[in-house]
Amino acid sequence: METQFAPSLLAADFSNLTAEIKLIEKADYLHLDVMDGVYVPNITFGPGLIKAIRDKTELPFDTHLMITRPERYIDDFAAAGTDVLTVHLEATDHIHRVIQQIKEKGLQAGCSLNPATPLSSLEYILPDLDQVLIMSVNPGFGGQSYIPQITDKIAKLKRIITQNDYECKIEVDGGIKNHNLKEIVQAGADIIVAGSAIFKADSPAEALAKMRSIAAD
Ligand code: DX5
Ligand code: ZN
Image 1 (cartoon, helix red, strand yellow):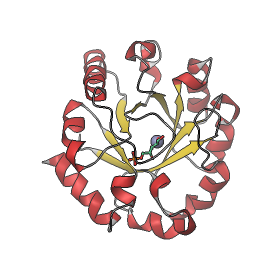
Image 2: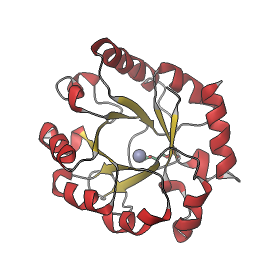
Image 3: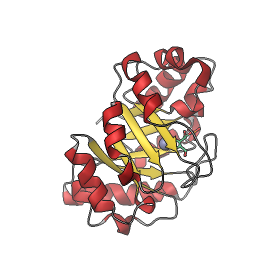
Image 4: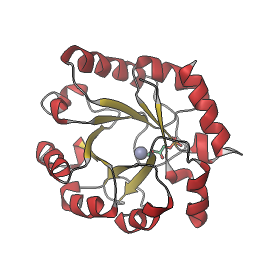
């Protein structure tokens, strides 16, 4: 399958979101980083903003919740119009229940793992997941450096998914640039999240096209 791209709005100009979103219309998803200042040391936006931009683009919304006890807000994010909803395994006591809650809303369900969280913690939920979001930086901020040992983690997860014939996609998030994109795709990433590499470029549309050509090469 061709590599898909999910530009992260976190790196966009927040004073001009409608215009920023137009620049990446050729992407596959719009990645939306929700942070609560508790689970991670930063605060971004919530379902109100997602709802406000829902009709500004046809792109599916890929919402990444970095919030404590996400089970409290699944209904709100579903109502805001997200298509994929990803929660952190580390942010809830009952990850299996939250995944079911997301699926009951008719959304695609994702589970995210922080860099230090082992893949073994996914063993009993992997059959239920539409995607796993592998964090390749510590969550909270854009513009950090890719943690090199995550490439091996992606490759291991790819083997598990292939061996078991699971449908689950692998999304990788954090520090992805032109120079490390190829190794991440070769390791098994299906969806690439990129914030600063796309929105901080002179032309986000060209930066996205360049990343696509590197991934496909
Ligand atoms: C970090 C967020 C990322 C972030 C990626 O917590 O989950 O999605 O926006 O930004 P870059 O690509 O700049 O590392
Ligand atoms: Zn993210």
